[in-house]
Length: 105
Image (cartoon, rainbow, N blue to C red; front, side, top):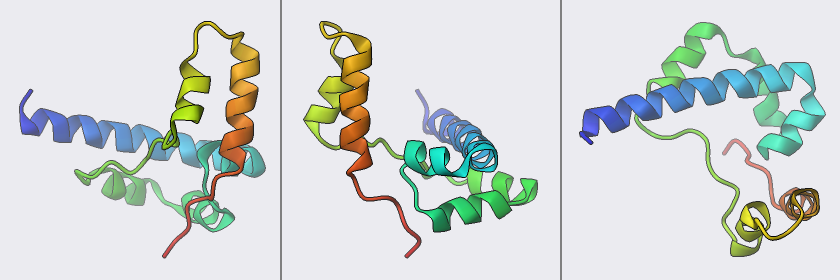
C-alpha cells in the first residue's frame, strides 16, 4: 500500500468520524459524550462546526479519532467470543465510563 493510499484512507475515516460525531452530538449530547469519550467542551465545538470546517479538519493526514482500548482488559472484554456478548459489553462500558474524557488544551 502506498503512502498516498494511507493518507486518503485516513482522510475518509476523519470525514466519516467527524460527521458521525457531530450527528451524535446533535441527536443526544449526553450519550455522544459518553460513547465518544469526549468532554462537553469538545461536544460544543463539534456541534458548531460548519460543513466547510469539517472538510478542512478531515483533510489532515493525522487520524482524528482514537481507540479507547488502551488497556488489555477493555480490549479483551470487547473481543472475547467465549463470553456472552451483552455481559462483556456492559463491563467494557463500565470501564470506559471511568476513563478520562478528551479535552481541548
